[in-house]
Amino acid sequence: MALKNSGANLNLRVLPNIVDDLKQLTVYTRAAVLRIKCSTHFLAQSLTMKTRQLNATSAADLEATEVILKEGGIVAVPTETVYGLAADASSVDAVAAVFAAKQRPPTHPLIVHIAGFSDLDKWAEDVPEHALTLAQAFWPGPLTMLLKKASHVPSIVTGGLDTIGVRVPSHPVLQRLLQSSGLGLAAPSANPYKHLSPTSARQVLDALDGRINAVVDGGECTIGVESTIVDLTKDDVMVLRAGPISPSELSAVLNRQVLVPAQHSAVVPGNMADHYQPRTPLYLISREELLVKMQLPSESSVFVVLADFPAERFVNRLANKISMPKNKQDFARVLYKTLHELDSKNFNAIWFEIPPQTEEWLDVNDRLVRASYSIT
Ligand code: TXA
Ligand code: MG
Image 1 (spheres, helix red, strand yellow):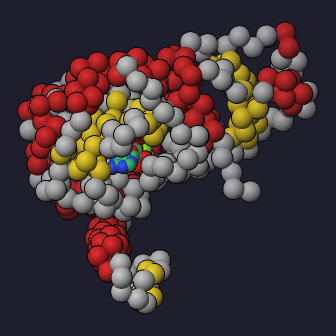
Image 2 (image 1 turned 45 degrees about the vertical axis):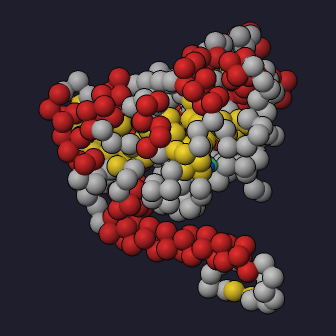
């Protein structure tokens, strides 16, 4: 029996695989229900709400944050990677509000943030031994583990999947919130779907003011790119999203080879080729190509070069140029900030020098390739 597209368009034929087909039908139905829930929330949310601006240095503001979250509100909070849009992960309504605010498709799962490894069994089942090994080495920190979802976790959190992404963040503000509230917090990056992730409260407000209950200003994120996602649900351990922790670091700790799928693979729902995009077209080009482009400068473009770019080769003094740090960590920390700033200046193009192609730079290369992706 074949099922086409959605639960609304079924082409029922023969019976032999009825059990599999019914399972499939359940998945389609769940997705349809999620879609309806999220669009209802989206309509409710399109009425502008007042977004409270809270400060992480104020104990009263942190208490207020906890209250909002416990009442089912959605709050942008700082993490060490990027700002996350947090909601009580056990509340279907709160999680639906996150999807609505971001306009994120309901099939794109969220990461659940917890206070520590000891909370993991509230969210995941059949946790393999190497999860503990990785947690001891990298938690709290920028590592998300993909595990089998505990059956009671609302399926809206995982976009209908039976796996769940879990992370223990190291940011002191979020750690404190997780510990004092006792909640698990579902938190995608606090940006509209497919746009650049925010690394400051200002960037969150620029995109989501009026669509979320509050933002907690905890200063700029120290890492600047999203966590590494590692899949522990299969025999092979695989990195699904490159991040601050490299495949070699994971392999060394696990004492086995961790696989890396080709870039742009859609293994992770939501891992779209055109994610993390500025509004201004961004072109990734080699230094040689940049040198040629710079001969014909246009006042309405900007060149983003690496710090070791030879100044004497930058022939046209009128052209707009900015330098990126040579050190990978510094580069990652300012990447989104730089793109947000350039995006606000209405250039008609960003010409970005391709960073080094080594494993250390895998995550920023991944984000830049997606930022430059174009379907034309
Ligand atoms: O550093 C980070 O991970 C940040 C901060 C806020 O913690 N969060 C973040 O969340 O980047 P988000 O939603 O923007 O990206 C999460 C990625 C998505 O590509 C999503 O599809 C994937 O994780 N993901 C989450 N749960 C998954 C699951 N059960 N199966 C497959 N992919 C999953
Ligand atoms: Mg994101």
